[in-house]
Amino acid sequence: MSLSADDVKVGETRESVLVDDLKRTRIVQYAGASGDFNPLHTDEKFATEVAGYPGVFAHGMLTMGMTGRVLTDWVGVEALLTFGVRFKAQVWPGDTLTATATVESVEDSPDGPVAHFSLRTVTQDGAEVVTGTASALLES
Image (cartoon, rainbow, N blue to C red):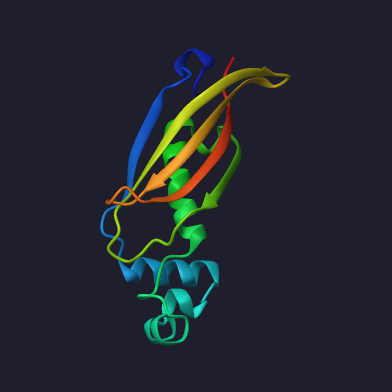
């Protein structure tokens, strides 16, 4: 899927529900896939009694990966040039996450037009958990 510069307008947004009611199972599956078995994400007793959190929480990179879907569903994986985020808050089991991508600018580059995006992921309560930026190469 490739988009042309004519298909993308500055100010245009896309929103996507990334997960509805995040399950602990998904967090543990991510731990297995990533090899990150930090007990903050997998061990309830450690997270509450040792670290003082209300419970286990999702890996930041799981949230980042899910956030990236709003972009890849829009511009395609192959068009993505850059993608970076800032983690703002923990994501807890039971959270519903919604991501929004907004076209901030489209500029010419030697390889063709490039769209620049701002990103924002929030919980069901509107709490911002991720912000970021991305860019994608568009068809001329």
